[in-house]
Structure formats: C-alpha cells, structure tokens
Image (tube, rainbow over all chains, first blue to last red; front, top):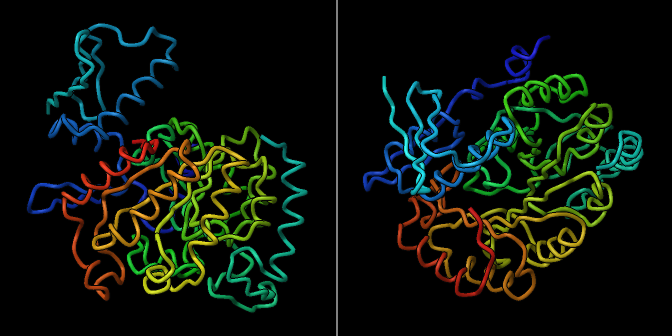
Length: 101
Length: 276
C-alpha cells in the first residue's frame, strides 16, 4: 500500500473528499469537512470572515516554517490549489485571494 | 509523549473494560467481548467510518487528521454524524496496520496531529491504544470527546493525549436528559473538565444551540469564567438541524445570527479566553 492508496482504502463511506456546504437564504454559509481549497474559495467570496482568515493565516505560517522562509514576505504570491494567486500585501495583514480559472 | 511500551501497558489496563465496561459514566459493566452491549452498543472492535484532513477545527490544531469512530455513549438529537455515530457496526476495523498507513497518508498531506473523534472515542479506548501502540513517529494526539467518561479514562490517557477537546454541550441536566438522553450531565462534565485541565492542554468547545442561550450557554460561560478562565474556549455558531433535531421545536431551525453575537459579547464580558 502506498501513501496515495492508504486513505482510499481506509474510508468506508466516500466522504474524504466531500465538503458539504449549506447556504442559508440570509447568506450564511455552513461548511462541514472544509478542505484548503474550499477555505480559499470562501475567503475569495467573503474576505471579512475572521475565522477563515485565521485558518488561512495559520496555514501560511506553517508553510513558511516548513520552507524555512522569513514570515510575511512583502507581496509574496503563491499558486493555490484553485489555480489562482494568493497575495500578501506588506502593509495589510488581510489575506486576499484572486482565483483565475 | 509516552513510548509504545507505555501505551501497550495502558492498553492492557484498558482491555479490562471490554470485560466489564466502565469507560463512560453509564457504567453499564457489560462484557463486550462476550457479546453483551451497553447503551453505546459497542463491542470489542472499533470501526472507522471516515478519516480525513480537516481545516475547520480550532486554528491551533489545523491541519488535523481526524479519525471518526462509530459508536457513542450519548444520543444527541442534533448529532451531525447521525447514524454513523450511533451504529458501531459502521466503518472498517481499526487495526495498527490500517492506522499506520493512514498516518503516513495524513503526514504526507501536512497533518500536524491525529485527532480521535466519533461518535465518541472513549468507548473504543482499548482499540485506540492498541492501534497507536506500534505506530512509529506517532504525531501529537488530540482527543475530541463528549467528556461523559469516567475518571479512570484520564488515567489511561495520561501522557498519551497532547490536547483534549471537550464538548460542553448542555448547561443543565434537564436539557441534557431531554436532548441527549443522559443523566447527571453537568456534575460529570465539570468534574472531568477539572481533571483534564490538570493533565494536559484543554480546549472547551460549545456549540450554540437555538433556544438554549439562557438555559445552556450562559451557565456554561459563567462556570468557565469561575473555574477555568484560562482554558481556551471555542464558541461554535454553525448549528444546523441534523439527525433527529426536528423532534425538538427549538432545534428545527438554524441559529439566529444575533444569538452568536450575544454569546460572544457575554464570553468577552466574562473574560473568557475565546479562540477561533
């Protein structure tokens, strides 16, 4: 069994790659089983969601630590799983994303 | 983190509960290996009905590799996992081989920890210890629980768990009995929270329930402020009707937005350490 197979073999139901998103009529969005891609998409739709922004910032810190880079590089841009770009302006801690399909 | 040998020794003690189960406060005492079943209906085998990398947990935990085990000692009408949580025959058997392969899978995808969830992991403690006992490079362990366990469970988990995530669901016994079918809830929960806070890092989570701001949330927030003010408090506002919540009029609709704001204001007013 290789790494790529392990998850699929373990899963009983086919839910590992499933994110359930519920949108209320008033615009509230409920997400169960959030993936990184879904979080990035949610942040693109509503960049004012503090919780989503906090999770993405945490993931950015972890990635920075793994790569051994100095944190918060000005205007650092990386490719996201959605194929878009993730920009970190030097004077604004807000994490913004532009998704280009 | 304890080594595999220590976990194996704990496993031996935990296995005794398969013969006379006192892992949760139902204290049914049944011989699960002989086929008897208590309120959780669990036998001697733990089963995983889902595992995945999650990003929706508390920020300090993500990305977290969650293992969902079927079987639970409570019967919360609003359970998001529904029948997967309550039917312990669902899923595939948790074995050391399966666990080790899954951990490698999760690590390759950036998981920072392994998190046991349910259902309720406590009812499968012997199997969980068995699965972890031979795993090389075991990641930090997060134990997400309803905290309806006996104090013996904390002895078995001492040094094994890095972070406890406790679901403090109800602020009074009447609501717990009515919605989750459990007695003596608040005494058990508050006792266990005090124990866990002394043993390991603890995060207390509360899912705001519609119609339960005054009867459940406010007592919980006040208790936290009086007893565990420095323990991180995770206030969850994402309630959606699930499972059998329609049986309870107040639980049949999502939370109204102003309730979340009120709850946060109260938490901050009480000085709780609210986390994302």
